[in-house]
Image 1 (cartoon, rainbow, N blue to C red):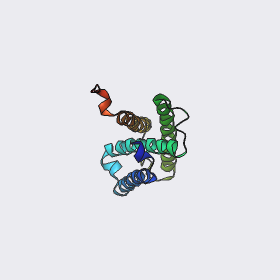
Image 2: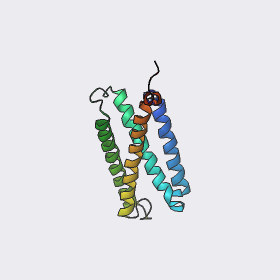
Image 3: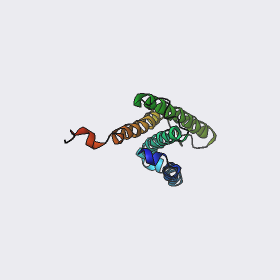
Image 4: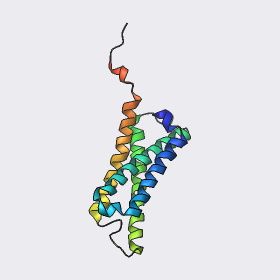
Length: 144
C-alpha cells in the first residue's frame, strides 16, 4: 500500500474518479434523488483526504517525524476534519447564494452526518493501511 501512496498518479487517479462522481452527482442531481449518495460522497471524500495526507507525509519525507500509528492517525483525522469543516462552510455559502436553499445543506443533522462520514472514510483508510502493512504471514509461527 505504501508503494501506491508514493505514486502521485495513484493519488491523482483517485481524485479524478472522486471528482467525476461528484460532478455527475451534481449534473444528474443524484444527491436529491438518492439521499444516500451524498453520504457515499462524503465517505469517499474522507478516504481521498486520508490518501492525500499519507501521500504528503511520504512525499515530503515527514514519515520519520513519528512512526507511531496513533500519532499519524490523529494527525490524519485532524486533517480530514479540517477539510471537512471547510467543505461544510463551502456548502453553507453556496446555499446562501443559490435560489434553492436546500441544495447542499438542508439542516444541521445533514452537516453532522457529513462530517462523521468524512471522518469514518479517513478512519477506514488508515485502519486498512495498518492491517495491510503487517504481513499476513507474521500471524503464523515460523518454521524451522
